[in-house]
Image (cartoon, rainbow, N blue to C red):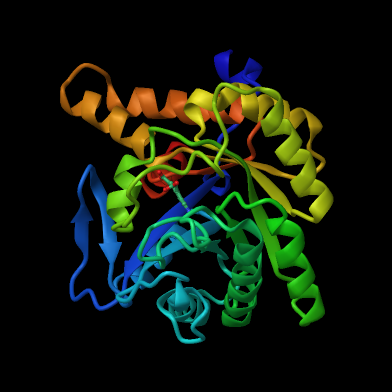
Amino acid sequence: MRDLVADVTLEPKNLMLPIFVKEGLEAPRSIEGMADVLQHTEQSFLDVLDDAIGAGIKSVMFFAVPKIRDAKGSQATAENGILSRVIRSARAHVGNDLVLVADLCLDEFTDHGHCGVLDNQGLIDNDSTLIRYADMGLVLAAAGADLLGTSGMMDGQVASIRKALDLRGFENTGILAYSAKYASGFYGPFRNAVESALDGDRKTYQQDYRRTREGLAEVELDLAEGADLIMVKPALVYLDVIAKAAAVSNRPVAAYLVSGEYAMVEASAKAGVIDRELAIFEILYSIRRAGAQIICTYWALEFAKKLKEQR
Ligand code: PBG
C-alpha cells in the first residue's frame, strides 16, 4: 500500500557521480574528510566508469587536479591539460553510454584558488574571467564533453560560453548551469579533494544564503542565457530554493549534495547516532521531492547499486 501511493521516485538515472582525477598520481588515494571518495589516477577512474554504467548511472561529472597552477589558470585552457585528457579517455572508454560533464571553473587551476582571474587589487575580474571561461569551454567541448558544468558564478558566464560554442561549431555541447550556488560552509572536504589553494572566501561571487529572491533571479538569467539544465548547490539546506527553481524552470533541475553534507552524514553514521542507509535514502528522496531530477552526489554509485538490487 505504501508503494502504491508513494509519488516520489528515485532511480539510478537520477544520480550523477562526481569523479576526481589528479595529474601525476600513481595510485588512487582517499580524500581527507571524505573517507570513501578517492582521488583517481588517469587510469583508475576508467574502472569507476564501468561500474557506473553497470549500476544504471547515466552521468558523471569530472574535476581535475593539475600539477601546475598559476594566476590565470593556464592549465584550464591547455589543449592537452589534465581535464581535457580525462574527458578524451573517458569518451574513448564509454562511447555514448554515459553523459560526460566537465567542471568549467578556474578554481582548481589558479594558484590563488579563486574561480576567476583577479584584477590588480586582488578582486575577481568578472569580465576577464568570462573570456577564460569561453576558451575553457571550447577546449572541453573539443575534448568531447557532453555538458559543461559552469560552477564559477561569474555574471554572464552561460551567455559567454554558449556564444563561443555556437560560433565554433559546438552547438551540441550543452550547459549545466550552477545557477543558484551559495557561499557555503559545506564545501570544506571538496577543497581537500581538489587541493584548493583558496585563502579567504567566495562571498563576492557566490550567493548570500540570507537572500531569497536572488537565487531565482540567477535561475531566470541562466535560462535566458541558454542553460540546458540548471542546478542548485548545496542541496540539503536549500530544498526551498530547489522547489522554487523547479517551479519556474522549463529545463531539468539538478541539485548538488555537496561534500560537507556528505561528510556530516558519514560522521554521524560512524558515531552510531543515525542509521546510515535509512538517512541517505531519506535525503535523496527529499531532494527528489523538492523537485530536482538529477542529484549530483558522492553516494551515487553505492546507492544506484542498492536501487538496482531493490528492483
Ligand atoms: C568550485 C566548486 C565548489 C564545489 C564544486 N566546485 C565549491 C567551492 O569551492 O566554492 C563544491 C562541491 C562540494 O563541496 O562537494 N568550482
